[in-house]
Length: 351
Image 1: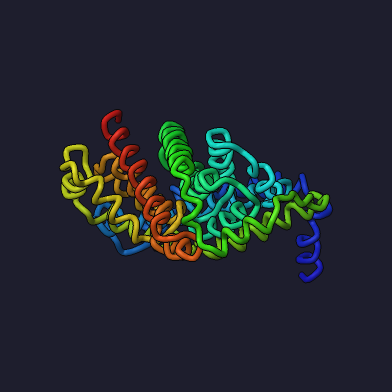
Image 2 (image 1 turned 90 degrees about the horizontal axis):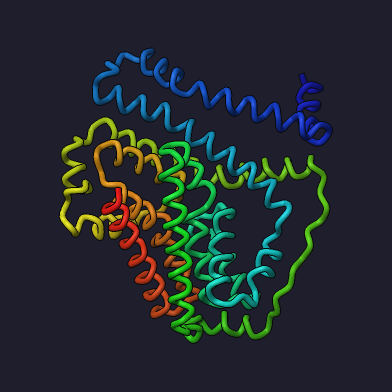
């Protein structure tokens, strides 16, 4: 038994391509079995499938492993991708860039960095240290949690490519435009003194990563999964549980009256205000989004709620206070919230 375990442990290093093919086949087989498995689990319980509890349980049994599988797959692949592009090289790409082109590049880089809003702050500081312009750095800070590959893949898997593509375009627009506005305001003096001193003493530079074998890259993918999924799995379970409760018990008419297309004008700002104190990432909030949409909530209002949860979290603002002075924090929150509201109204008008 120990010999078999040792062989399995050495397999990725010896035959990495074969291992990846085998792992992908297992992943797809598990993904395809989710619906029948969730229905079988509910059928095995003394619960009427047509009841509120039966619907909530089926939602929970189906969505929890579905979101986890999507998350593990994307994080594993990105863990391999990150072995080719180091944070130092990322900072070097952005340093010296002007507003506009630099904002677009920074926001695009945010797509491939699976950070929650708080996790993106250390890299935000690193960008400032490397001499990246303030507005360009903010474009990354906004895009990294809000428009990362995890959010896009989960949206695609749950709602289809059209909604995922619309979210990508509008999210990038918010990140780019907000960064340009902050850059044009020239608010560098509102960085904390220690950050400004750090900018004056440090110079940007790129550190070339070591040449790795594919076995080592696969190991890094596993480490990436263990680090990120280990931190967020509880948020995912809690998010799915809340989504299941909404799906099974919240009346459709009630949700339509609060967040539906015929809701009053203040419903969208209220959804954004409710989202800011919440702290989770895309993987944790998307099951809630799915349940809200299933209950008749307007797409724009729900997406604005989602953006506010993952791009303007209260813990992120608390951490940023160590880097930014209050006026710059207020400007950041005001500009991003305005962009999110605009996205919500546009979606509600067009869809």
